[in-house]
Image (cartoon, rainbow, N blue to C red; front, top):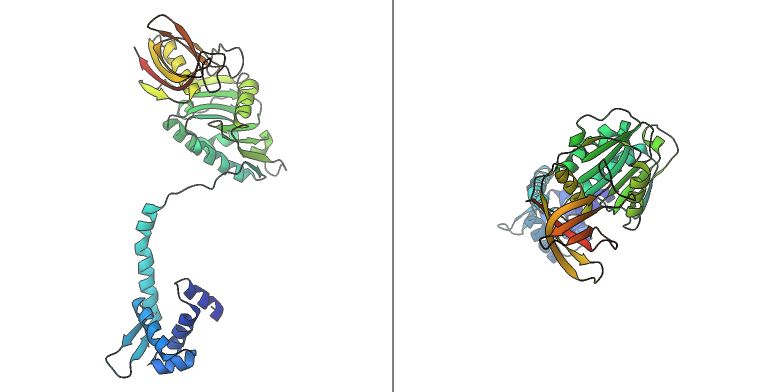
Length: 348
């Protein structure tokens, strides 16, 4: 190691340039009187006494002031390094306890040219999902992201999965998705996370190397719903449904409307009497409102047989105890009576 690098490293321990000069001079002498060090380092004797106290406190030197004149002795560098290493290692648990691990924030748009990078981004995006994940991937990619999909299902995320380029249902499909569909032809890879993050990649990019094609990762709330609309409008209807997970245990509260619609559908199909408490906004008056009653109808395009009129149409109809039928919609609802913010489902 050259002298400049050594000085830079010592500077990381908080030593000034003069302190470094004094310490390196002392190392060359092994031990010496303050006057000797002062002359060799080009500093005053008083400064040497001051610096020696600092160096002693940090474990770099020993000061023998029981003799006249005072002798300053450099400690064996091996001992110094060993103590510094122990100090750093002892800090590690406390530092880790305070450390919040975060992934680098995704920029609004990121262009990716590498298949390996796309695989990593896919796994990261799936792990970001809190409520809803729509995803279309080729069969060749499924096993790479299976652990991340399983974690998402365990978190209660609504996972709507298309596996393309296959005629065989994936193994243990209910452990990786709420609804799984397959399609014999390759589809573009589409991923949206909670309608705010996503990825779009050409189909061949994930099944062949060096295609020269590129993927785009986005973090833009305006674009997310557009990709979701494309997913439900162009790809979801043509794929074949091969697996539907069991409904969640109730009661449960949902702030994501499609999750509430999905669970309501499954429970009504089981001929259970289902009740809902809905808080949200009256679409006519824009006033806060709460409605409670029996779920009597579901309009949805998530699971077969679907009964919606257009791809992203999903709604619930709740019959109150007064006999009024109230139509419930999700975020941005205007046709329905209420735009739901929270729905609690329970069995009657």
